[in-house]
Image (cartoon, rainbow, N blue to C red; front, side):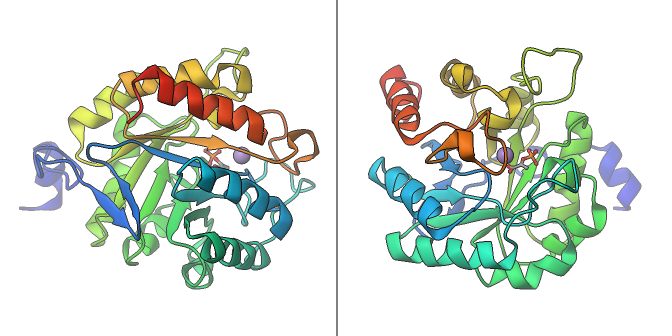
Length: 275
Ligand code: PEP
Ligand code: MN
């Protein structure tokens, strides 16, 4: 079948038409998709070994398996903290190996793939790079699972087609993550598109997660938003956790501290929606 026809017939590789059963992604001891929910947490940026180890140990105590943390940071201003780069990834591997966790971190260009592959388990493609087709093709040629974020103003069709780029190259271990979209609303950093969850679950076979930190930008509503997306069928949640959020080098306002994380996690467990 030619490529054009493939698209028109809804026979995209990401579609339920192509594969009816849910894709379940196993990464070491972590399982994403299927019958249990995945809670991914960690700081916005990796800032030091101490910082990451403090957070990771707290998450491990709550039974979490996947640690997030940015080393290559896509910042709006060139004057903002750009991340520790390879040094940050080294810290991440060191901490994750010490306590036994799976790691996810963002890469922003094909040139970072080989370096990042040595240190982390999952490549995150950030919202700002969802349309970076060279990057999508390049990660599609790797064996690493990919956590693909929805673009700032991307439609669900565009989001699914971005994932299609990765599968088309032969890598079918892709997870989709809704992280809020740009609207006129000012009360939240972005607008959490809850309807994206059931639509993506219906249209694709890929695991669907929701980043409640970036989609809301405010920690006071993380729990109700997390419950809402679980009720809507999400396979997992991402949340940013920092030992001392006011001093964080990025996203200071939206990160929760460790006590707040435990309260959030307990709230999820008590809700009966998280299992
Ligand atoms: C992040 O997860 O650190 C991040 C930068 O998110 P997004 O690409 O969704 O803005
Ligand atoms: Mn962040």
